[in-house]
Image (cartoon, rainbow, N blue to C red; front, side, top):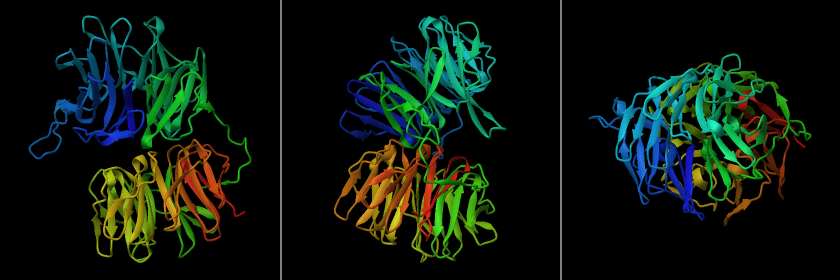
Length: 573
């Protein structure tokens, strides 16, 4: 997950989870050494010799033009764990002035001020979580955050809490002409079972909610283009604001967008979940088109009643019984039986990302916090617990007792009949998808085009020639393997080399599977693509819901699952 970026003529920095600091010099991406392995949330600086980053556990980093140095936070106790001290209060935003003064904000009203020499704490007069900070044209500083909290720092350095009637959780702010400020965020509504976005303007005296009759997803970032203002947020939403009008634009992704960077070329870059990087021209917004309305093209897929509104992240076809299963949020596991979807008892309370056959013929479900659950046909029991905040994202079984699991931070687990063992994978990057020909020939795909290959003894890198994140892998044989990923990336291995195939899709492709005659990939914003043996075709689904999993039964019918409990079926042609 990427949170923010910063750029100059020499290159682009993008920061994110696990201490990720990535630099692009115009030719290639390089992962830079990071002093701490915690999420980095925001960047600000006057130039790359005076560049600051803030993040989790109160982390503050400084870039001197050559390397990144840690100057604050991530204090550990005698046991080597992060200590419960004020200095470790998470920080989420930073901004400053041309003279080098800067302010960083975070949880429990935490505000730190850099005076050009040292960082010191300032009293904001609030204990609310703060998520945004900006410097106004007149030198005053504004911070905002939870429950409509807005605080303003005057020229004497005193903070005042302003009376904002909109109880939104603000995550972004932008200074506008004439002393105005645009605030963006969102609130959780129980009846809607989700977040709704808010845009609020402050004119220097009072707050006004903008576009009150329009329904938005939660906003995360604000930016400027030659066409107007951009507001980004959850589920890939991008809105263009021009005077009193706001238009939804098609981003080509269903992933949450968390930050926006103005590039020296005049283009803008959005960054977000699953390593999303979107680039478009600031004048023409060339990567953003008017949102496609569902139903414009005849759909080859039909919707099914899943019986749930939970997010669905995984699907599995049991070849022995020709049965289909789906899984997702809050332990959700569904089975397709006698033509309809039915819910099994929940597999725990956490999210389930994938399913596989258990060694005894039962069902395994794996997901958040490294938990693996076993279903014996009646009830679930805990099969394995990693006891770490690491998510298992994919399972693969050979059907004969050999099982592999892959996930966050390069996690690979192996079951060979007695117990789960963690394997050295050779990477610390997330691994999203697994596929194997047998227990001695597996592939795992992940961040920045990474493909890891298991040969029965060790994992080695298997370069596909792309820097795009890869989210799934599937093949018919060791000479016929497909991968899919970010921005419609599709790759094919023919036994000798990888070929990156134009998919005619801007949408992220998140999952794929196939038969002896065709291959189907699905992804963000209802995207689907089908390979007929000769070339790829876009395959209208009739939905804009994100599709995160796909499976095919013995009859050649495809099933896709995704956001909001969406399940689609594609009949055999």
